[in-house]
Every structure is written in C-alpha cells, then in structure tokens.
Image (cartoon, rainbow, N blue to C red; front, side):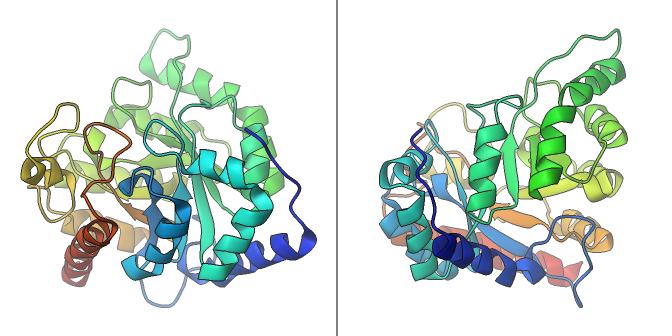
Length: 307
C-alpha cells in the first residue's frame, strides 16, 4: 500500500487526539482512571465499504472517540487511507475530532506488521490486531510458547513505538481454546503483546469468558462486544444474523463487564459482528448501522451498571 509522508503538524494533530483520549483508552497497565467506564472504539467494517468521509462523522455518534480501520475483505478503509494518503487522512481525523485507535490487519499476519506498526504510530494509534500462526511443539503449551518466541522481534518494535500487538483468539487457529489464551498470557514477554478477545470464538459460557478476562490481566489489549448467536458463516435472515450483537443473542455480558471492571481494563471496547457476505454494511443505511451500535451500547451500559 502507498504510504505518504505525514507532516509534523498533522502528526501532532493526530497524536493530540489520541492523547486527549488517553484517559478513555490506555494500554493495560497504565495509571487507572477514577471510576470505571467502557472506552468505545468504532469498527470500520460495520459500515462495509462506505466512504471514510461518511463513516468518520459517525464515530462520536456511537459514543466512541477512536476508529479501528480494516482492509478488504471485511471493509476497504485501509485501502481508502492508502489512496488518499496519510496526510489527508490525518486531516480528516482532525476535522472530525476522532483518533485512530487501532488498525486490524489479518491479511499481514503476525510476522508482517512492522511497516504497519510504524503507520499506526505516525497516526497516533495504539493497537494493531491480527491472527496467530501455528508453531512446532509436542503440546499445546509448547506450540504457544514457540509462537510467542517467534514474535519477540516484532514485540521489540512495538515496545519501541509504544504500541501493542493484539492476537485475536480466532477459530481454528493456535490461539483459540481457553487454555491456549492462558498459555499465551503466561509467555507474553511484555504488555505490548496481548490478546484481542473475541467472545464469539469462545464457548458461550459467561463464567468461562469472565474467568479468561481475569486470567489475561494486562495481556488483554482489546475487547470485542461480540457473541456467537447463530454464527456468521452462512446467509441468515437479518434478525438472526444480528444475534451476534450484544443484547440480541443469549450471552449475558454482565459477568464479562464485571470481570473487566475488576481488572480495571483501560483498553478499547468494540461493538462488533460480521455480516454475510463480508464487506457489506451490517444494515442497509449508515444511520441504521449507527442506531444498531447504539442499541448494543445501551445494553452494555445496562450490564455495566448491574456489574
């Protein structure tokens, strides 16, 4: 992807937005904030391939201060950034008072993030998310340890840049079942390497997921408000597809939010689902997407109050 040179003024503007939101979304392990709240970030693929000029004004409407930029196949917003250039994208963020909080790059894999981490840093972002890769070993614990060892040079760069690498617990990957997440947290050498937790891919048991949150501790670097519902791998009627959203499917998020509160989790929370096919908005209009995110956010806030 084409990368243009960002000016000092634009970098300062983007970084200022990010720092202004620091009290609302620090990396785990940072100084705690008075009182607990969820620090929302907007996932760009919720709007499919809608132009960034239309998506960025929605960020604050959803109660978020930052945006998570995804590439194809789930969206094309990273490609849009490459097309308009980093300078222009920084201006757009500044215009709307929005920070770039995250970039999600499953396409690059865990060993191909170095250039993208530099882009993340230039734009004031804090977390880059990707998937795991298999590694050799006689046991699951050995394989997880070997994978973490292979990540060490990438974690070193993340530390240097002041960003975090989040590995999602994706289905059919090395980091998937609960024990693999615990092993990952055990071997992770730094708070700059952690888990981007997707409840969708875990047993739909509130106590299991809440226990994992507690076990991950400072190595929880991102939390998705996303449940399995009826899945996202085949076309379903829209009301059934939306069961992935918080407050629609059967998963009770109250124990999860209680665990986040007890952890004093200071990372981002992302309301999320996958449409079928990928790359389309979750609902037909931009206003409807924003409305559905806000419905889910109201549910999460109710759960948090109960927690």
